[in-house]
Image (cartoon, rainbow, N blue to C red; front, side):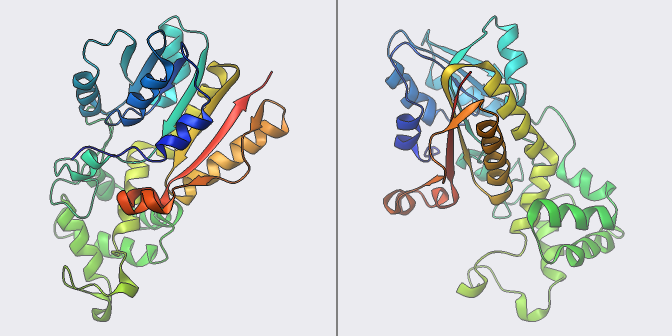
Length: 302
């Protein structure tokens, strides 16, 4: 199943794309946003697509094969300024950063991103670099794990889960998504343990949800990458160019909101709207993952 790009029409409208524009998609994914951007910028436009996930580049290589307007770059968008400089590109007209997970990544059992799949606890966006989530769970202390789950997952049971993980790994390493889920569930009172498919509506969020989020953020250094990527994006934008960021949880959105407001206060950018745009009900019904998406846009000014 191909990933549905979220807030697609809103992105196209507020990036204010023109025929012939040079646009950067910092998070290619499966190319849904890029495909629509190419249609908007016409035959004389150019698109540079970044992704640190080699599988995403392979998918988009197949999708855009033979299109001379497209250049694909295997790189984290946090390095957008350096990478464009190396390509001899000084300024671009628009940048899009969609910092959510793709359906393909979540469904890939080898990646370990989701508690709904069975597989190795990896979680690296770029499988060729960095530590796996299972390695972090082995090396971090109980206090470090609790802080991680609290800060990056906003998990109120952070201390309980951290203690359970440390106790569990003393007898057997936590190496798979199933290992981690079982450890989390075993730490809960029996009244809060439910069989698959029998979770009541008041407990619809699995207790491991925020733990998986926190680990993924830590493994990929996602929040710092977002900060670096936004700064780099503003630096490479031409005056009047726009940066659009789609975030999917409160930690990301706070970073985007704070940075955009700071740039506006410094007269480096103009907010296109003060409150984020969210998905319409019709989109949420068609694509449930869009329900948590928030779009913010800023225009660079000199």
